[in-house]
Image (cartoon, rainbow, N blue to C red; front, side, top):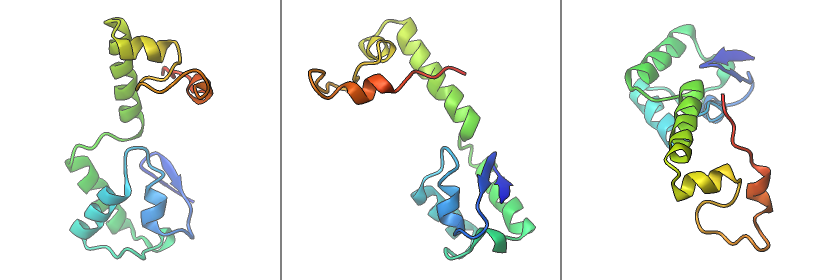
Length: 119
């Protein structure tokens, strides 16, 4: 396993699909980064050279993408601000109820299971 961008990646997996495990990267963004660096889409994690990994990390850092802990902190700050100003969304989130108008009579058990995480 390789430790890359605060996430462990499996060696025998394709690099595109293993980078999806990094919180904040999606498939479309990863394809764009690969195209910009000239990497093949069928590249496996164990075939990645150190130079390619450094170039990938530099490109991600230059593009100012929030990843992992920074993105988690941003989301927590966003919801704590909504709770602090006592908006409808913030209060629904605080009481662990559906936020976007879903019904609560029968199907709210999923949203009640999800908890508001603070770091």
